Image (cartoon, rainbow, N blue to C red; front, side, top):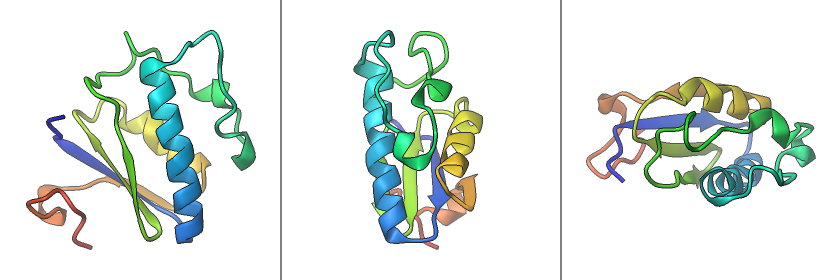
Length: 117
């Protein structure tokens, strides 16, 4: 995937970030490969209904490949091909407990695409 944008979500603990990362990665996979008539319970442990975050892979996402949420401490980094779904992802991460969600600028990412802050 040719990443042009990186979304960074910051959580209060590594444990929370890991739990959210697992759930969001399952959600990414379901959006790209799953049956949208059969909505899994991915966010219910966080007090959210997954059906509030259904995206149609043919009309609402512009991902060629399934995104991956990478956990580093209390942070989650997601590489995206565009910022078209940023608002939805920001809302989702904030609802899952992130206290800061933003798209990183080039000056905040090293040559390997890793967050430098």
